[in-house]
Image 1 (spheres, rainbow, N blue to C red):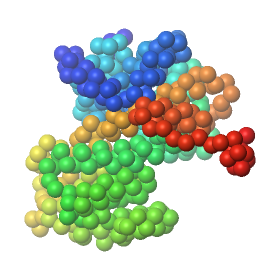
Image 2 (image 1 turned 90 degrees about the horizontal axis):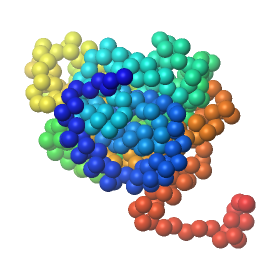
Image 3 (image 1 turned 120 degrees about the vertical axis):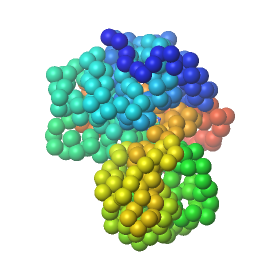
Image 4 (image 1 turned 90 degrees about the vertical axis):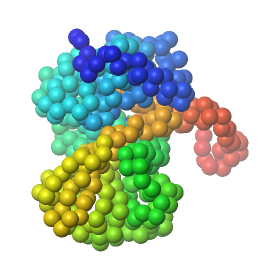
Length: 413
Ligand code: ADE
């Protein structure tokens, strides 16, 4: 089967990008070194549906070096980088992804990858698992299991499990400490503001930034906005997270109030209709909106369009929506993940941890699928510890160890 990418001639630039991030992914390099010798995935086919940028490409290559036949599709039409896709295809991985593809093409690419009849699927957002449970059910018997990268995908998986319909074991990679504590918080925190700043070329300091959602991603977005000098306002539906935001030093209020005062709005809730028509109607002239949640449903764009007298692109990744009263509202990156659609995703040092979680989750499934029930599982705790130890070693940080007496005191064995 042939890969489907935009242009193979773009490969040299993609190779440079992959080589760059590899320098900052020491845990993945150690995994590459060890498992390219033992090849634990020999004879196995892995389908990876993830944001196809340089870190993802390196992870796919690590699986290939570890013996797997690997196919990669993107998990969002705007996050695929065509040069990286070409470089990855050139290196021997099957790639089915193009930047800006239509939703029909997006589904077709997932189907093409699934035609390779995977033993393991790695998903980001749940689209491939959904496809397997609906249109490609004939492939279910061969699947040993899979893993899910993101909060939204884990929510979809748990719903499937609750309905008794999940047909194989899935590891919620997102819920591993070595993933969400760092990727969702520091990764999203930095990459989101990187995407917003490089797109707008505007100052954040002194602006009122409204962050919708105070989960791990929202916490990261808020923390970095504060560090950049913004006046941060949080909107929440969960009373406990709202208290957390208050004690972290932020103002908390409903979106109906925040809509009137925000200069920049950022949604990270995972839910739809967070910013809707009644909010657009009261926003200040020049207000900007961006989303870092998985799907482009948090800002209701059809309602925004219906209220507007014109919609036009005024700068790469910025659309202006002119209102009847003359106010101009701006939407970044079509309301899709601003950190990936208008940036390069999370920093390499962070994805080093996330992708180590993914690698060991896949290895766990391949070694233990017979003992694992159909359903959502956590990555075993000792693997989190192992990854954390590998990361600390790679950055030259040492820590204390318990004495025997201390261990006894804590009733550890
Ligand atoms: N790079 C690859 N996958 C990513 C993700 N889920 N979030 C941010 N950056 C990424």
